[in-house]
Picture 1 (tube, rainbow, N blue to C red):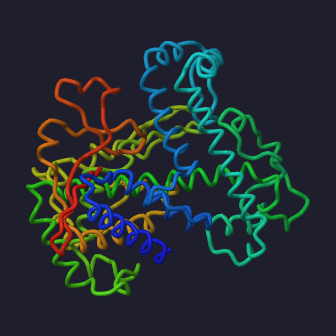
Picture 2 (picture 1 turned 120 degrees about the horizontal axis):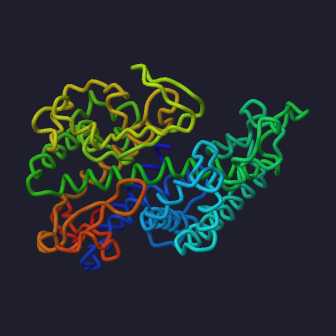
Picture 3 (picture 1 turned 120 degrees about the vertical axis):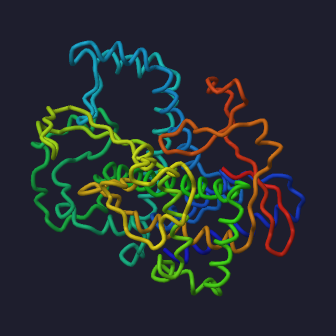
Length: 435
């Protein structure tokens, strides 16, 4: 894992320097950060080497972004219709979130009357096709038994040990998956059966999609916001202090290990990461649904299907907890470092649903940041930002976009670029886009 992150980070440095030497006026760092995380997880998760950072077109990555944006456009452009349909009695209206079921009215509208939903369906089909190819490639690999990528590890596991039982077509779309009942999940009759078997392709596809959602966008958003903060003129001293810490503690690649990149050895790097997560959580709000009648710790009763939403974006800016400067980017508040209570700082969720990839994501962000800041000094293109204001993009995760003053309500006119320059530590300057 470490070697993959390091190789991809060095590839990013090489590309930035190369494009600078070629006289490029701008480099799209949004693409670079999202490509960095995609290239990394495709190798770590699936043993597939791609180079979208270098311009390689990957059908999976393109479809993943298309599905993400189509989903958000579908939701945001149809809120009034959803509200009206939600008033109809079930099963004609409404959404049964915990069963992933739509009422008849919404299902008909989604399938036949929404351009964005039809685009979403297309992208999902592409994702399923590409996932099936990844699975088949690992299935046919004679060295699968020695594979260390996550997909190989899953495929070598016994189906019954992971809770997959008699169901012949696990996975599928939301509607079909929701209709599977406990009666379908009986013993396989073969306790040695593994997920490598072809009938578990849909189950593995669902696993793949979940791993990419968790491992790609969130870390890319973290890196995007961190370098945005470091590039602000008011935060120039923060970037200088971070570079000085890295210059002192990062001498060779051997210093960039999981055990070494900790809060003790690199307190300011760690603080910058956590301060970015505090102000700009990659998932700014999170809904949960009651699968049965239940009760919150304070005694509040929740009926089945009730929805509870918590908002890390707001919680992390609470002045009673973080002081009057809660809106400011101040990494020093995390020094000395004390691991935050996940229920008070739910950036990675908490309890049984805590993010399993939390440590990997933080390590990936730290390593990439260390390599980039050691090689470049970043700063904003003020001429561009005097005209274009920053805001949030149409994604489930909190990436960035820009709009011209007076056009903040025109979602179609938003651009997905935040321009900045990257000046090499040797003195050469490369104009970049960072978002």
